[in-house]
View (spheres, rainbow, N blue to C red):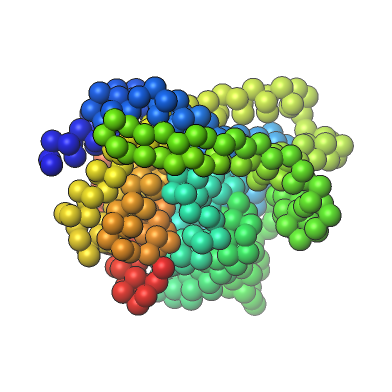
Length: 510
């Protein structure tokens, strides 16, 4: 039993070894994991060419479902950044208050969460760490605080690409997963706010600000996710945190002289234009039936025949993932990006050569993550069709038993720690988590919510993310201290997420 389990786990073990042991990037290691999955499935589990071909064809549709969002989200971010939007917001936020505790909450929690919501890709720490350092925060705090602060928004950040990966790999519809995922991450939001306050040396008097801002961020994220517009849930939560934080900062100055404003209202409006357009287009597509019907006319989908391995693992005939091209979240993001570019150019905010730089930087920026996503999707699809996932799930079920909910967040965190991405973790482990839950008779939604919540926290622990954050303020000599500090805060949170998921399941949660 142990031998067959280790054989089934070989592609994942190889992936972990190459990234952690050899220092390979996820983009470089994931094709090796895919190749290992092909060899093991063929030689060890009797998957013939027909099984491998069907699995790879299905993986194309699953990967595209995620990649369309990743590409378009980064495209929109680059449009806003090229027009100076990110720099404008980065200059505006610190001027709201001289109170260091509120500064930490506004910048390392709310603003970092907003940046994760609209872009991701390491942007939250890269943008906010230099701001915090410039305000006089210790270099360790400047990296650790925003790393912890934005962790809760990772799943619904990057315009929902991680959650879309959870849906695609787990095979469970988004509406079934949204409430539980948003609830766990909403609880994590309050914890992240407290951790930012604690690591930055904020006063107990700031706990009221944590409560009010956390309620706004978690509440808006939950409402948007459950409302079916999860690709703007992280962005909406971060924006709500900034808005409420602005009010809190202003109230703290009541009766005294407010700090001077560093940017004008027009500049802030232009900085947020692309994301306001995204909200308007999303709501129009969601609630204006004629437009929704028009954009739903083109669906790309394929049917697949039944296939079976020589060991008797049967995959029945089924329809593959359907892509509603013009109503897809990636399409909606693209509409917002193009319209924002045109309006910003008309307003004189776009420098010369902006279009060329935006397109070039987008292609370069998403190449590595796209290769990793495509390879990991192919790897886990092959493993599922060959019966390897089933073997792993039964082994985990036998080892963990009723305690599996406590393990689920740690499995998600491991995937994200290794790959540096919650999206990759969800692609890698969502089906494994689902099958283990099914074997144990546990509710799928809470287990998959624990997977993606753990992956969100684990993603900020990734050595790659730590290196990027430290490099942004020339603190590469402190990487080990940064990682150790992050682990001290993240480990109790991962444990708490498992306990909450377990209690929800004991209470009859699905």
